[in-house]
Image (cartoon, rainbow, N blue to C red; front, side, top):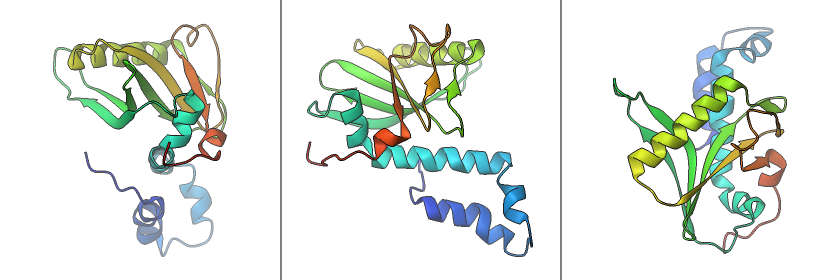
Length: 171
């Protein structure tokens, strides 16, 4: 998977270049589109990857060696496809399975999304054959509301403010 990691370049290619002659009020119209929401989510994901040391600090694992990646299972007729935004594969026999959500309000896990998350965890275990302990981590802009669907499923939450705490790239 190739990802453009410069947020401004992504913004320019999606919004400025194709909308140069849009006129007055164009930005208000654009900011409520699915394309805008997709860009916001992808831009937030790149910010999260750039701040992985701060994420590790928020998780309480700054000194544990780890490798970060995304994970994708191709779609097939039998089990479907699956994608995980960030995997933090740790040397201490644990993996943080991170779902990154950009919302303008606190996120809420409903019954349907809880099933999606459980399916992702199961697909990851089966595909990778890992024996490591999996911790489901939600990284959101403004946190999430804990409810009957998230209790026992989500192990840790990280909010946008956690990404901008002091950290060292040498940890």
